[in-house]
Image 1 (tube, rainbow, N blue to C red):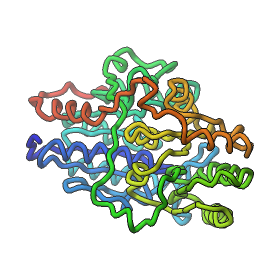
Image 2: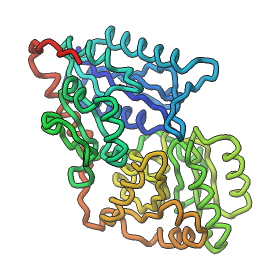
Image 3: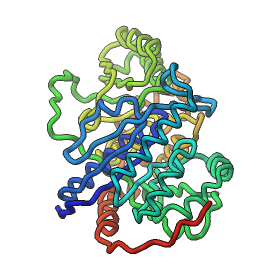
Image 4: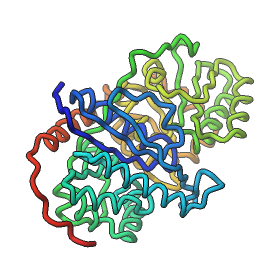
Length: 402
């Protein structure tokens, strides 16, 4: 562990839907403070349940007002009593003031180059002028090239990445997927890209599994935050209702954002079937994954990293709307032989889903398929942050007006 008494890292996680952005930032933060003694990390997050997670010493978070993205692509304030415009203005002000006071050596922005509705532009401008290192961190799959291209062209994102960011990190293996496939970005942006590798996960050592009273040799069914996880849960239950001989234990984790009506429907159907345990939410889901014999999931980034890290057999049933991110990731992983995959329409047929579930316990482990997926992303990030912090501070040229 190296010592950096005065170094500070700021992470931004816009968090409009689900848990993925916050969980990824939290993993990076924990890896950094473990690597660098006395390094401080602050996460700015829009997640409404950021406080449900444990954070290590020297990692803290600031909660900004929550905004959620609807299926039609529009945004709305999580609180019905606050206008969206006022919510966005509060977010901008809090982020900028936090950055101004915190004075980070490194600012890592998760996924959204300019922040939600451009809320980071003033902060990026200020930190650039102060000499902070600015890093854009992208998951290995953003969305379909057509969708990303349209969004980025509309907001001139490529040119602004070139103006603001010193580095672009892709949290994935180079041979797995390129998030900028089909996207017209300046050559200088491509030159700043580094594929870090996927982010390896580990299970916390302090969790008491006995308190959960889980069965042995279970298949875990998880839909991340759960806001769009109802269809997957219903598809699995329909397969069990169709084929009553599928009696191996299931543990279903609904997620904190599943609506109450769906939650109650799933619990009621599960009560009528054998060997199904339903949990609402578990902040240390890694422990449950580690003990599972296999995983059924939609294929979000974090769950995919956990499937690889814990070498678990997996069936992915990705959503394709409003983004195709999960579908692209699942299809590529299936192509490499790492997982089984059903599209959502096929999974809606109980007989097809029943056959897929029956095959799952006997499929080869991901490690047996010979596909090489780099899981050293956290180590690579630590090495690059160390270089940024150790560099002698040099005056930067005046920031060009956009």
